Length: 280
Image (cartoon, rainbow, N blue to C red; front, side, top):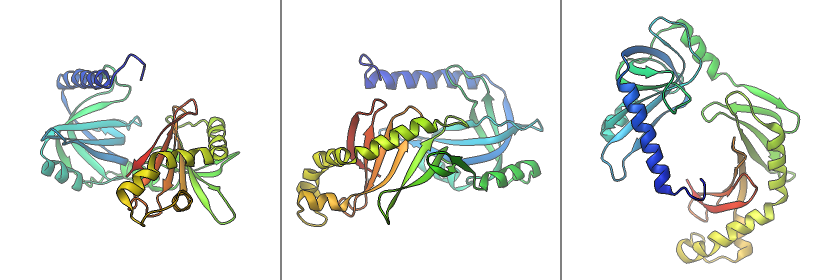
């Protein structure tokens, strides 16, 4: 976000993009789409001050009618749902399943860099389609990358990042997660970020101390009043997540301090500590 751009500006820009997308998709004909629900591709949003919800499903691969398979992920949404309608839709399908829907779609939406669609109806779930079923089985298989620094990394398709383990001591390890840009990742940059954060761990833990120690003793006291050293002994490094942008998140287990809430320290793309807060 630029210095001159406010949160209201961001919300207004997002709303405008959505309106443009809606108008564009409304003008498209209804097509029959068959595809594999991509891992992590089911979701819902809304609620809060609104009483309506939006359902979304991402398919990859997919096809229109009897056409050739396409391998660029398509997001199909349905807006204006009640919470019960949203839950019914999400409960009717699951990741890796082949589904067939009627939707208005476009592969070249203004201001969007991926295919988008508006759901008209769900025609069929658990579709029997030999080609797409084979693709679904392929997605379920583990996929590994051998990195010269991190070693063997496994792809988590639901978030499109590669995971590896790093040692923090003789018997302790933590997880490194490196986001991919499509099918690629910047291993050299990730190495520099991770090794730098490991060297700065005392500084990162001090940021947690500054932001959350008094909060614990004043408001939580899950384990009674603690000293600073007792507080530090409870929190354990769990993972470092490196984003495509070069920013990162350092995640810690709370050791029961905050009743199981994770602790995240956000690091911006310049390496500065942005925040330390409870999450999850």
